[in-house]
Image 1 (cartoon, rainbow, N blue to C red):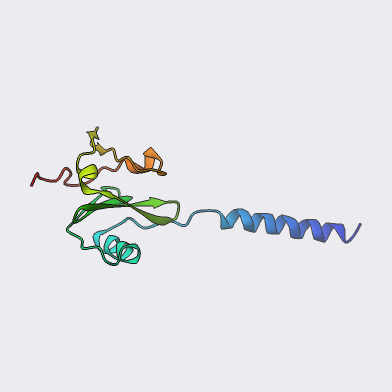
Image 2 (cartoon, one colour):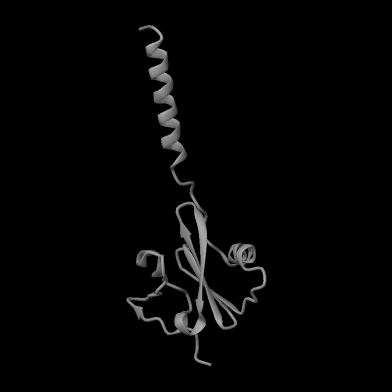
Length: 122
């Protein structure tokens, strides 16, 4: 019985550490320099024409020629999705939010409020 108590305490400590490990680290707001760095990791060949940042620093939409790159916070990390520029530029804006349609991405994460959006027509 005396060996059972230390084992129980050890299990509780491990469960507590596992719970703490799942907590997201605070992620600093996205700025243009960080967006360029993150995009360079995933799309090193991308030529960045323009960046629109979300006012809260949670996302950025980038024009790269005929492509749009959408960078957004997911948990304690950043994720990038690409789509056609025409699709991004033609996405509806409702209540100041751009409504992107991205497969596999929650609509909640694809509704940024971008400073300077929409772009001027060519």
